[in-house]
Length: 366
Image 1 (tube, rainbow, N blue to C red):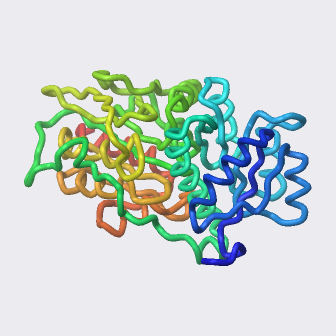
Image 2: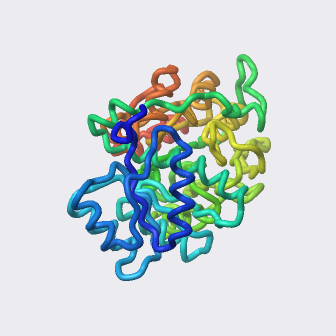
């Protein structure tokens, strides 16, 4: 793909000239992405878009004149375009990013400090991946032609965190446990799923690909709208019915069994499948600790994180589900899982809560 028109066209909207220059440099390290244009505020962005629409918008939220959130709301009401938000580390920035996700943005990425080369290197990978995922979500003819899964080269497997399940693995009977993985489009999908669950649902562990500092606010938001309790993961948290635990950004979340009960383990470690936290790590831990006592659910997202772990869960007797294409924002992770034979069932998002409660009743003999 040598011509700019054949690449993913990105509009950068940020009021800082130095940030725009940095983001342009980061984005164009990817041979399939090009910066179509830049704008220092939302009004200039609208003017640029009148002349040529981008494939993806990379958006700062704190801007003069019109806020990024208002801009998102206007874009989504008129002509939806995939939007990736670049936000700050601060709680105010993470809360604004979560509001942007609810308004229709597809991804929220931490904006690196211009003077921190290590932050820039990490953010380059995250931003280019997010742009690709956002573009894939458009399901346009161009996206269908260009979209491909990223190469597995250079991606750590879950082996770097914990061992594979042994052959003929089985676990003592315990209370049922549910593990869920999601990426692009997952914040909205998880809210729809968790708000549909009753207060006595089985305990749930969740990996949603999100940056550090964002997951605490995400858990608070879900807790405020759900009947169940939703918390960010801490180490050695004893799991109980009616509670969902969100993996902390920047740390892997593992399920551990202590005799007949389950606890969490929050582990520092390298990226797995280009993510930290990784769905594969959570699912493998469930395959090791819970086996037939568990249900694994893989929701919308780009790439293949979670597919291997879901297969390992199924092989150890777990009940496994992948989200269907029609209800997925990006049918990447679920598709790979289905192709691997990891999904016992393929269901729309609207049926997930009922499937969890049916599993719970059947498992407990009710």
